[in-house]
Image (tube, rainbow, N blue to C red; front, side):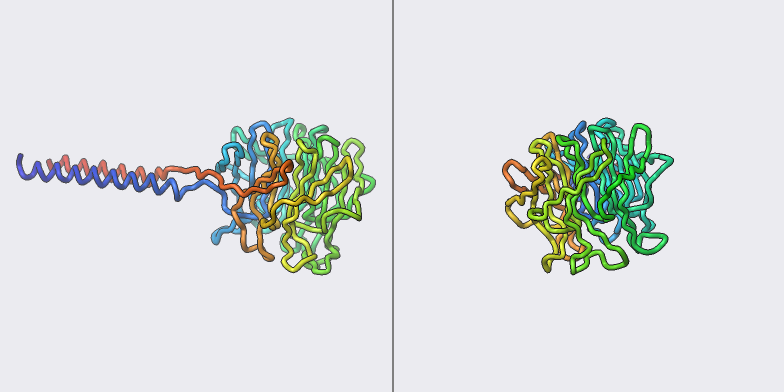
Length: 398
C-alpha cells in the first residue's frame, strides 16, 4: 500500500470517528438542552380540553431575564405527565391577566382581554383550536371594554361564556387612572356575539376575582378579588379593598345572588385560583394573597358546596403557598392541576412547579413532568455538511 493511500484511509478513519463523536454529543446534549417544559410564570391562563384530555396554558410573565411578556402556548397531558410547546403561527397579544375557558360544545378555547405587549389592556377575543393548533382572532361587533384581571367561566348548560368585572390599572389604561368594572357579559361562540347582560343586581366592581361553573347546580360561583375606588395601591394593608364575598350567577334568569356566609368562608384575597371538581361536586379554591399576615401568601385549600352553601377548609400537607397561579380540573383523571404562580411577597420567584390535588384523599402532590426532547437539526445539518465537504476534499486529493 502506498504511503499517500495509507494517509487517505487514515484521514477518512479519523473523520468518521470525529463525526461519530460529534453526532453522539450533539444528539445527547440536545436531549437535555432542548427540554420542552415551561418556565415558571404567573398571570398566565389555563383551561382543560375534555375532548382531547389536555390542559392548555397560555401567556403570563415568565421567570426570564430576557422577556417580561410570555406568549407561549403549552399543552399538558396529565396521563402522560408531559408538556408540549405548541408553537402556533399566531397568538393573542393579551399575554398577562387575560382569561381562557373551554367551550365544550364547540371543542375550542375562548380567550379575552389581558395586558398586551404595548403595556395597554386588550378587548380582543381569540379562539384556540387544539387539533390544528391555531389561534384565530374573532370579530364580534359588540365587544366589552378594554380590561384585564376579569373572571370568566363556561356555562355548558346554556353553551355561553360568562365574563364579569375586571378593570384597568393606571399603568395599562391609555386614559389614565384605575377602573373597576361590575358588568356581566355573555359570549356565544357559534354566533361570535358578546351580549351585555345588565342584571338588576351585580356584585361590587372588582378585579382579580375568580369564577368556576358548577355544572350540577347550573350556577357560576365567584369569590374574592379587590375593589379599589381610586389610585390606592391594590395591596392595601388595611384590607379595605379586599373582598371575601361569594356570589352565584344564573344565566337563565340573569341574576346574581349573594350567598356569602359570614361565619365560615375563606379570608378576603386576590391572586387565588378556583376549579370545579365535577366528580365531587365541589368548587376547589387554593392560595392567593391577603393582607392578614406579614408574608401575604396563602397555602389554604377550601372546598365550596353550592347545595349546602358551605365553605370547608381542607387540611392537606402545607408548603406550597403562592399567588398568581392557575388551576384546571382534569375530569378524565379526577384531579385539579395547578401550575406556576409566585411564592414571595413580591413577584420575583416563579417556581416552574406542577401540583396535583385529589379531593377524595385531600392531598397535594408535586410531580416532575417527563422531559421531552428535540434534536438540534441545525447543528446536526452543519456537522453532516462539514463531513461531506471533508470527504469530497479527501477524494479529490486521491
